[in-house]
Length: 125
Image 1 (cartoon, rainbow, N blue to C red):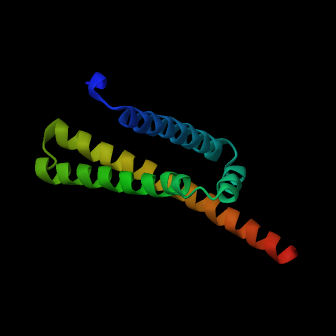
Image 2 (cartoon, helix red, strand yellow):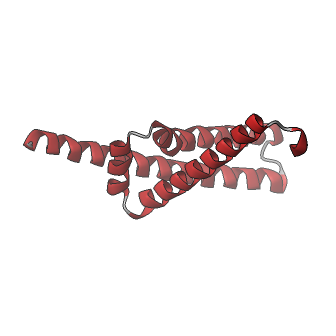
């Protein structure tokens, strides 16, 4: 298959692969930064004006969490609380919603904190 690809196609595939590796590295670095030093990470993301990272760090967890919670809720409605499967679904739904709400609260807290400090810095200057 690769032998049939033209030189231009190989270059495009190579650039896509390198871009994917770069974005994955930056995303993992920013996620680690949000865990270790969230204020500094938010400041770096703002200074770099990297909209893809803002999207990956704030929009993706919300949408993924909502899809998974909706799927579990749908499974709960389909299976009803019958036996062990129903209890497992109820427990997993409760745990997932709790973890999701904690994640949302954490991200919102640091976002508000960052915006407040940034607003104070603009008023001082």
